[in-house]
Length: 505
Image (cartoon, rainbow, N blue to C red; front, side, top):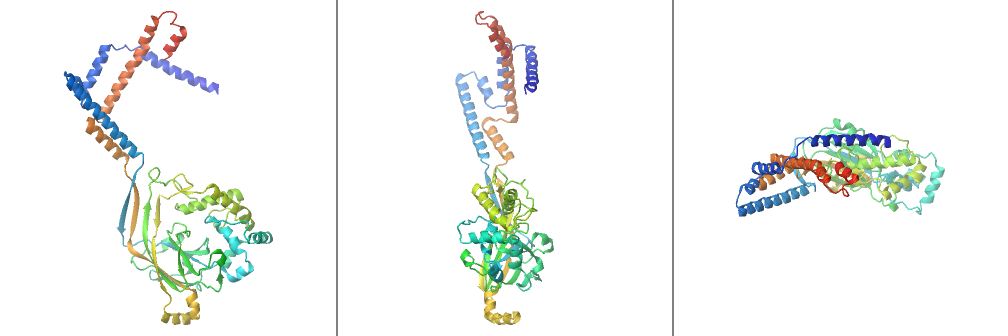
């Protein structure tokens, strides 16, 4: 290490010696030259008021002008300081704009049955509710007590069913979309069917997304308000059942309206329609643009590996997937990635404890710029208002009963009608903007300089030149005069060490 430091010190010393020799060759200016330079600067500078202090012969006038200049400089410093403090608080403004269009993109809609598993499957595997509660923890925080009644039964089930695939069980035993469960589908005057939906796993098990990202180019944009997506589902309550002890006592369809480029999020954002009801949903498109840090909380350079566009929910899923794959060596089927799928015993013995550890240590956080998943810089939401009416009405009930060859009681207890339309062909953009930009800050500071001192960039350069010249003369004085003075000091005070120290300075 020392071999590398010595050449560096010699180099620095060599540069210092060259500068010192250059300055020693220059003549030392006389006090008269210094006073003349100060006088010339005072009468020629564009800094207003300074020449009035120098030229006036009256002491009273000089004092007045000195007070005026010092007062103006004081106010100027205070104004510039307040402008800089305001700028570095990174203030923002919010602009709201409503734009009307002839055509508007229809969102994606993900539908799930509130009853997750078939009755015969639950009869064969009664422990499935407890196992599914562990598996679905990847979507949200969910406390599972180790002393719960299903815990020991779950341990026994995991031990005795080593080859049990929770993925295949949910696919085969959960709600599935077909011609018999999707009785009617109409999108903007055209028929649609189960082939227009994409299967996806959520905390509700099997769910299906209409207008998903893979076929978004095939869908037409809506050009008339009041027309959109109309569906009739058969939830089949006699085939599907859920445990009311776990809080699932409803029958109907739950759905989430989201951007086709993003994953559906049901936690806090899901809408539901009970059986025997016609749900009319009117939506509006709301685009929100956030500023990057430090003005806002977004980070535009963040990219996701498994999603085409960034979203906080997708980021959280990838964050959990990374930690689980690192700790358990496998990946839950509900999380994105190409890792090896976790077996059932891994969910119980590894995945669930890791998820608890992630929540406890806050390894996957969201919101602020320094969190694992900050807010997205641009996001599209679909605020919805929903109203209900009885479905079907009395005279239509008999017609549907004959058409479907089902009893009227069955129709009332199993059919759900959902209609999703745009209220208006417009979208609202809420954009976060910088309240003070760099050009505005420079213009503000320049205005304060001109108002109080009549100064400009050229004036600042003049002052810098004046200070630099005086500093240059000061260096010459210390290099030329100080050694001469030390030669006249008494021998007792003129020690070689002191002399060397002064020359080095």
